[in-house]
Image (cartoon, helix red, strand yellow):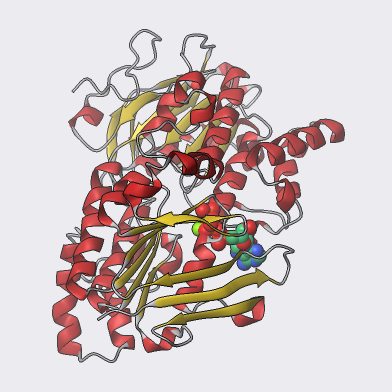
Length: 510
Ligand SMILES: Nc1ncnc2c1ncn2[C@@H]1O[C@H](COP(=O)(O)OP(=O)(O)OP(=O)(O)O)[C@@H](O)[C@H]1O
Ligand SMILES: [Mg+2]
């Protein structure tokens, strides 16, 4: 079963914003059609998906025109639409994963025998080889995304809307998750609307591409036509679309231009000695035998599959988790008067002045009530003058395309805007060591290039950057050495301290 979606002059404006978040849109999506929805970060993609799922809170804004799903106003209580949200954390509700998968089916009033039989099957279908009683809290970001998809699989809805379903999933598994989505769609023949910046993953599997522009639809048509029409190229580039088989910023000569060669590395800032890492209360380490040294101006990428311990390693290097065994040690150039050598032993003020950490989930990080004050906080705490701080804030706002949102509340930003803000707020004071977890997720091709420039800037100023990332192009663009976790190579980690023994991004010596 499937339902059509029609929009006539439909727009949605948040009460506290001048511009509509989306629209006005005129649009007809046929029952059973598969649509890839594209557009710059902030173009209104998530807003439209939420509208289709009927979950835009009425009191938070104003709609114009009409939006109908199956000829009726969207209503989440009918259970006809399955929605996978952009932020995987916000949709994990229960403490056991099986209950999360069952939730949608329970809302539909299915008998418990049906539910009990379906839960393990749906977990399996999404590659979650875990028992239903497995604790939800123990899932990685990517696993949470799969869990949400398992819930949709189990529900078999008439309309499936997916907001960047593979953004937190490692590239090797992204195609598997996509195929699982397509299997659900094929089984149910549901209408499918998917938002994803990674165009190539989907173009061979959708009927139509719709590009949201500043005011309404900028382009639409079958993928083959959209991406081969030379008249559309400029429009698509302006909308920040990642063109298939093109470099992210093709008008400026592509990534090659911003590629950076390592070489001018400064003194060692941080070193590990036989480090193994684990989350609190875990009996065994997730990664072990890490011998690293990190120099001023050096970028290190931590790569590996979901659940390999990348974020745990990042948090341990950042002094936010204690070592499971072995040590993380700051060298004199980073210590600068701190008595202890272990960052974990530093008081929080000392830590914050030396090591900046950007968490995987941007929303966990905001401390103030406006975009501008959020960016100003770091430089102020680091003792920059008011004029210097202001200049840095202006530079970052401009660079991130957030100038128009300077007074907006950080929590009211789109997914990609939040990510840019959380990264920029940490980059702002140029800490000596910067540790970032998936810094580029949710970015369009233009905002991605801006972020790369900001990282190159802090590296040139002598910061060291550790980036957990599935984004190979990003790691290449910042000239990162790679630490591969989660397979044999993590146990026999090469010493990457010397500048001539670098393992280059994209070259894993396989
Ligand atoms: N709760 C909110 N209150 C006010 N403005 C909001 C709110 N949520 C989103 N916006 C604004 O509405 C616009 C569209 O947001 P939306 O989340 O739909 O964008 P998006 O296309 O999904 O972007 P991204 O690719 O970054 O996820 C943005 O300018 C955003 O800042
Ligand atoms: Mg979004």
